Each structure stands twice: as C-alpha cells, then as structure tokens.
Image (cartoon, rainbow, N blue to C red; front, side, top):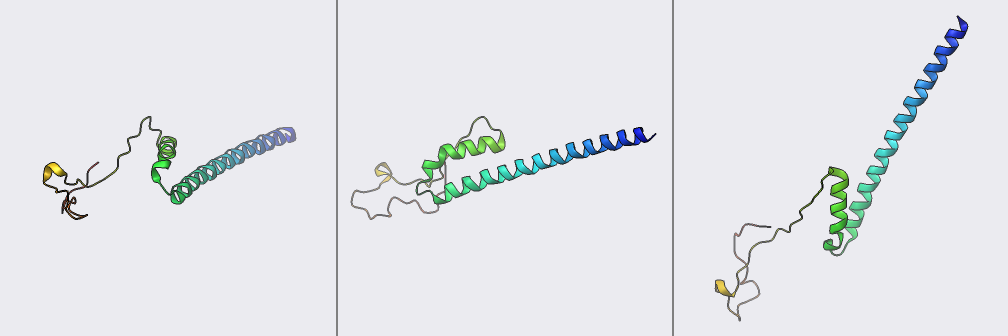
Length: 104
C-alpha cells in the first residue's frame, strides 16, 4: 500500500514538474515576443528615414501575423501638375489641391 502511495506521489510530482516547465516556457516565449516588439518599436522611433525600416516592418508583420505577403503603400494627397494648369512661376503651394482625399 505504501509503495502504491509513494508511486502516486512520484507521478504527481512529475506531472507538476512538467506543468511548471511548460508554464515557464510560455512565460519565456511571451517575454521574447514582447522584447521583439520593443526592439522593433525602438528601431522605428529612432530612424531618421522610415523607408530604411521597410524590410524590418515586413519581417515584423510576417512574424506576428503569419502573412506570406505584405503590401506597404504611402498615403499622399494628389497634386496639380503642369497639365492641370500649374504655371512655372506659381508660388510654392500652388500644386496643392484643397480638400483632396488621400490616396495610396
């Protein structure tokens, strides 16, 4: 009987050890993921030109969303050109179209 109790206690201790190890692995994985996010945000924040970070952003999106392709577009407002009536001697804001919608 005592041997059976000792065996059950041993199995329980083993199961608790396995569970604790699995929980520790989950915590470590979350910490690593949070560190990746923090590193990426720091890189973007410290960058002078965000175009230098495009590949890092694509890799970051792939890692965190599982996407196989990423499209990155820049939102800009359309501007007037010479064919739209812009003159060579117009001021520096003449190319701006008031109330224009942003587009990719």
